[in-house]
Image (cartoon, rainbow, N blue to C red):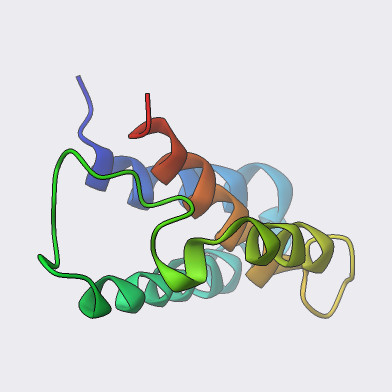
Length: 97
């Protein structure tokens, strides 16, 4: 079984290589930079709780932010950031089940 953290590295790499092949390295780096969204975990106490669902709990993991990230993925200038954030939120949502 692939751990959650490994998926956060592999999923953007796969998306970058499949859909942004011409600039896959830059695309991958931009999507990896979106992992900084997890800095909002530092506001929680405890910072990490294996039984906690991030979606809806952490400030940047709120549903209205997820809608914003989805919207960003439709515009060329913000597409990579939006896609990276949506991948991140989707993977975090898996921990909620």
